[in-house]
Amino acid sequence: MTRWIKSIFALLVSCLVGVGGIQYIAYPTLLQYERFVHVMDRFSYTKETLTLFLILSCWLFYLQLLFKRFSAIYLYLVYSVYLFLLFVVLFTKAPQYHTFSWDLFDFLVKDKKTILEAILNVLYFVPLGGLYGLKAKWWEFGVIALLTILGIETIQYVFYIGTFALSDILLNFIGCLLGYSICLGLRKFTVVEKNINDSQ
Image (cartoon, rainbow, N blue to C red):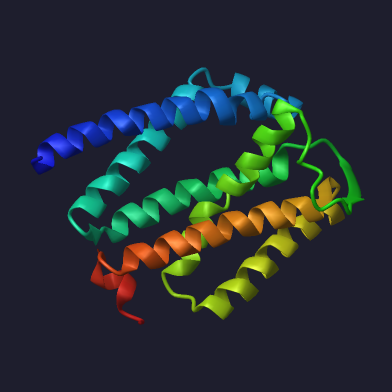
């Protein structure tokens, strides 16, 4: 199969991932939060914009895998948007409250919304784990990931914008671990542009 056929097929798959991920996982979960509803109502094309971003991110990711070379520009742009969206999701979704949740597996319930949110709590942090995988050794990754997640949970609690939840820490760390593992696998057969790797 030639590269251009693979590219077209990858675009179709990316469209399915983008539409399905936003339409059936991300958007229904985000609509549970009143603040998000108000924010998204201010821009008529929120869903379409998120879908397009996810489609292009996935498709360009595949194209770079195909050519075994990752563009620094792609990484900078995608991570800039990703980190902004992560900040919005983590620190603006909840009304003012702070509490603790010590139940490590509170997401293991027969409730679709809770399960979808648990899946998103994993997926949100996969790219962050991939970012750590560019440089960090396994023990550095463990320390940095846990400190980052603990910091996020603490900020949510201290500033009355969320719950300090052990289950969130577990799910977020699993997401980071998946991203880190994927990145390590990709590094074996791809090249990241020189200005990313200069300090290695």
